[in-house]
Length: 106
Image (cartoon, rainbow, N blue to C red; front, top):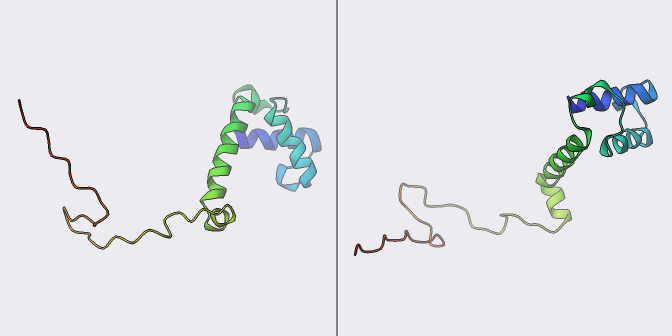
């Protein structure tokens, strides 16, 4: 509903779908969503400010999930960790902690 609301706001403000707008027009629509002032029927049901916060969080997560974006910020992820060679049941890699024994009963 939130994406539909963005489109409704674009159509209300610029008489075009959001994806057909110029980057400046798209920014204007998103700024109105961000502050909860975007026109459109969808915003009567979906809180625009809350939707914008959730959308921003999701987009940030998706952007930084890409290896090039991770490289951009200097994050190497698991690239420097050794692979898993012991795949059998109850086989531990040398770097894995041993199981903790339960304390003796008193």
